[in-house]
Length: 229
Image 1 (cartoon, rainbow, N blue to C red):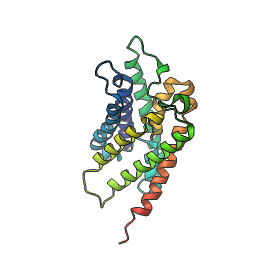
Image 2: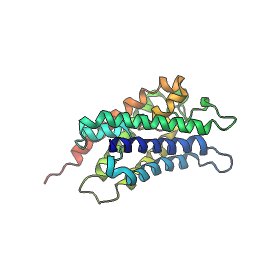
Image 3: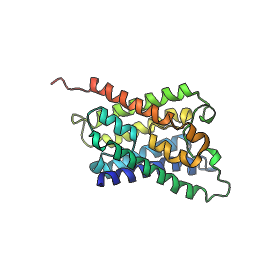
Image 4: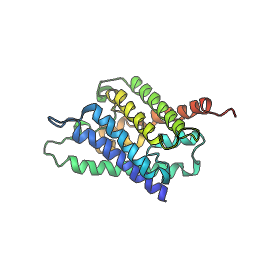
């Protein structure tokens, strides 16, 4: 139960910190943090939580990561569903807290997107569904390779949180224009449920693509990362 609680609060922090930076601070007049700032915010949530709860739950914060770690032989299948439930619950509660904060501004509108992920007309750069799926699959695949490699017992100890957080930052720098960056079904769900409408209708893509990418990443690392000794 401690591990599930850690995943709940860790994912809560990821969504509140990452999506909160996008909703509240990205375009703030005069001092908006923009795409770079939002990318860094997502990376920082992972770094801070990895040091805070990594020793409790492994700090997955992401159903795709949990599935990828299971596919890579690093996580017990019996814990998979409870981890995913805790992650999604944490993301939804974070979305609710963010809504309460953001709606305190007079001109706030959920129609602005509320940091939801999308494709086509709802992609920041108007990218197609195919482009969005390819982007999410590839980005999540690389994320899992970095996670599995940096947490390998042969890797330098103590640096995994930095590698993983910087990888997530880079992923956002690349893919925010395409999908607003998911690579995390819980993160996508946590805000989409408040927007409803198109955000919920397109949510399937941000479950399917990250999970496929995570399994591919685990498969690749099984090949390139296996020890021959």
